[in-house]
Image (tube, rainbow, N blue to C red; front, side):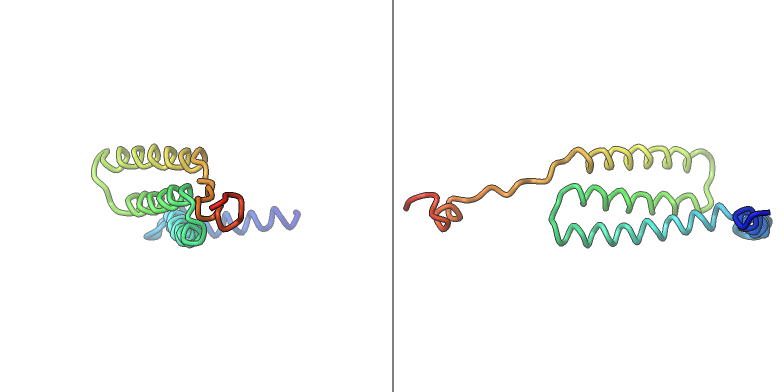
Length: 123
């Protein structure tokens, strides 16, 4: 038995220990994903404050929506409402990721004052 198979066996046994308790492995991983989304939200928001790049706003919104989706999935739900909201959130998340990829950062065009200061334009 190799070291990797021993690690996998231990992980599976630990995962099986969660079954039947109040929260199972999927709930724990869901909570971890939500916390990770909050960390990524904080990082992308910080990056936006430094760069002021429009695509970072979309990415921050994606992480926020993903966190809300995780919270909704953890809460008890009735009927198909949760599934409907989850599918809508998936669609919005994908659309925002697409916008974040497609939106180009604005290039700073020199103003007349900048050109005058550099000597490119005569006063």
